[in-house]
Image (cartoon, rainbow, N blue to C red; front, side):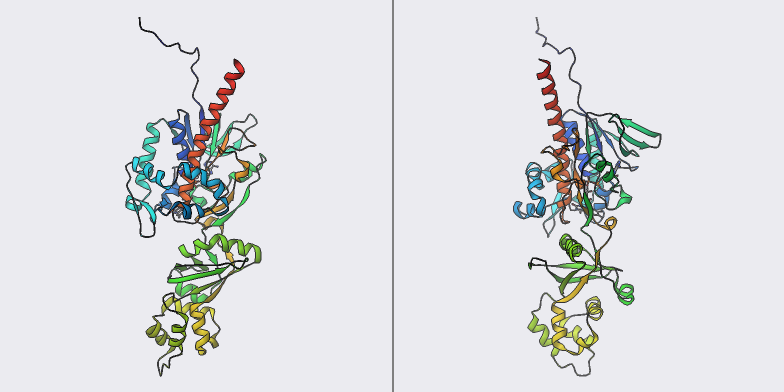
Length: 429
Ligand SMILES: Cc1cc2nc3c(=O)[nH]c(=O)nc-3n(C[C@H](O)[C@H](O)[C@H](O)COP(=O)(O)OP(=O)(O)OC[C@H]3O[C@@H](n4cnc5c(N)ncnc54)[C@H](O)[C@@H]3O)c2cc1C
């Protein structure tokens, strides 16, 4: 006679999990949870999911970076101790393999940045959503989370009116506070503060800065790239940071990759002292002696503009910046002009508003979370993604940490639920 294994009278019901926020962090938490056997419902306020992720894919999405582990980890600055263990579990290599598993090839650009094939996010998101739905994940759009009711249920505003949802565990993956029109509006901050969680103020990261240009510069040169240049910035500790790249003149100041790379330091300097002074080397390929000698070389009847263009290749927006930022008399002093070409001072007045930034700093402090990314003050509530208090430059570091924290939160829910079940059965026996 075949032996039938004894079945428990009541098979354990799967953990129910509500994920709020269907960006990369929330969807990754959903994947980890559904793979672990949980019943997963994902809620998002917007009419469709992953809007910011899709926007990141518009201009060529850097999903991660191929540089060595040490420099990679250093990009998370003061938050490295918290992010590092999560990246060791699911870092750039694992992320690329995961993407390949969805049938999306990746390639490494000349800068070391890793892109999905076609450089777009849409095919990746499509394939991912398909796999999640196949795995039983249910996605509810137009569900804006409003907090908790007096019974501890999650409150959602939906087109059919307010609904309340009970789940064993909740993962909040609500994004930061930039690009509110794509969903991440930071409206979750007071909801957590009301529950006693101290949130680090959301601040712009990877942002542009206001300078206050003349009308002439703003109207004639806004939108023009300035390249190549070296940006030099000496921080309050006297350490000079330098990097070559390019920036863009905007109607009010500057933005672009080179500026974003310095933006955390510049933002903090402005907050501390009311402004930040940077210096641009407009001719990184030429040393200061050469520049001085060429500026001083007799130019006969030629205008200064054509002299600078023919002797140094300096023209257009770079010359416009010199005129904007130097006193008129400096153009009659070759030494002053030469020095300014190699170190043009520019005072930054303010970061652009949070909503315009690529990402935000601040959020839920790691100290408020346990190792599973569960809020110590709210057992069963986990947090992931950009709403956590960390920041990183652009170049794939943002998405990599969003995926890693999402996965960790999903696995954290499974570990927490397993521990609860274990504790309950120990109590029963
Ligand atoms: C223009 C642009 C380009 C970028 N390019 C890159 C890049 O190339 N590489 C890179 O690494 N990063 C890039 N980023 C940053 C990256 O997109 C974000 O860091 C990432 O999307 C954050 O993921 P997340 O899941 O934490 O939050 P989000 O992607 O912001 O998702 C949060 C979700 O929560 C939902 N939500 C918020 N509040 C509620 C609520 N109350 N109720 C229900 N749902 C809610 C939102 O609708 C949203 O769908 C870019 C960002 C922008 C704006």
